[in-house]
Length: 324
Image (cartoon, rainbow, N blue to C red; front, side, top):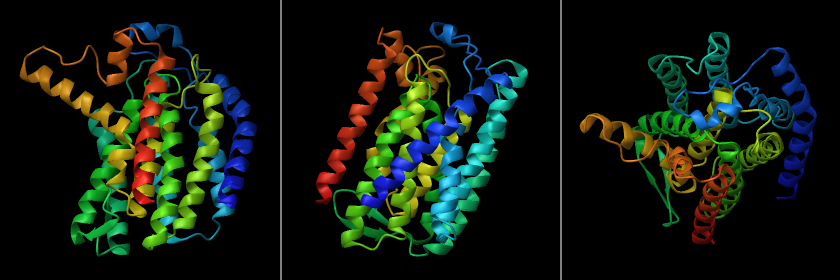
């Protein structure tokens, strides 16, 4: 755990060095965020630099390449998948910036990109884990689901990248929840490895530490009022990394618990759209995802971030206690 803490501190320091340069470059490129017309209370944020996810992606990439040099297969695939999603997100952000409106890749284009990456990752993971082993939360045991690990991995990747992306709608929200997720993921991986061999568990704990350092630094620039947004570049990267780290350490089902706020973001959006279509115009929430519903109710952004973060901490504590 000491070396994990060292990696966390190094990552935080490296991100501090990268951050001013990334923000300066984004301003020079006029990579400004456009605000959706139906989120009118965010109109003062228009023009804030976006694609700020590179603040934590670049130091993560540099340090992962150094620390995990010649690393293990699953870790390498996790990193490649996360970077592939970051590139997809950057393309989406670039189109928004060039068109000067909050409409990037079309829905079908984004899902094709997300799905293509997920299928490649799923096939590789099935070849590496043909038994399809996955842990059952609270039971301290695992089951082998065989071939079904392939579609499950694809589903988890697509669902998680979209869920993290949906959660990124309030200053500091996605970064705060992701930071707590990686902290507890590292602890859970360490605990699980004591009674069951988890592939490359030390490597994935290191990956979590590097992600935490970069995210903590990013929050210095992203809490309300944000000086920079992570954009789809950052949210898709985080979603890809969270999904692969969880699946590759047998913690796929734990994602539903530890990532409960990501689940709520996605579920509220799905419920809203489905109910709207079924009732021809009626709504369950004032606005979806759920954090926008809270904003409509008059909640301050800082209060929403605190709520989401606190619930994620509570979920993490529950997961850890059941493993002790």
